[in-house]
Length: 130
Image (cartoon, rainbow, N blue to C red; front, side):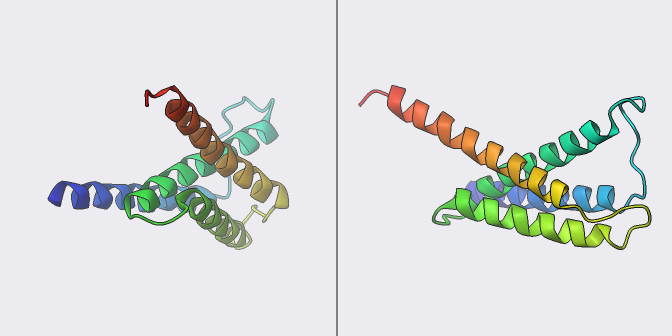
């Protein structure tokens, strides 16, 4: 029983740490340009997509481990709620603005993470003997 509890604590810590990272990144007026000035919009889209893909995956793990029914759906909802608070937070950061495009990109990242997990799970169930 202790190992299960320890695993859940680690999963919760990962979710909280990842949300804290997103908050810190969102609090920056400017993020480093990793594209050399050539594709700043692509960097923004890819960044949003990736951090929310990871957040949805982390939420799914913690919720499934807690025995929540339909953890994928709840993970998607919780990820989008956090994305909404992130966009609201950006309204108060100099040189940052809330963006519907960012929110859509966040949702797409979450959907891809959860959709890929479902596909992999279905394939593994179909290929297992029995």
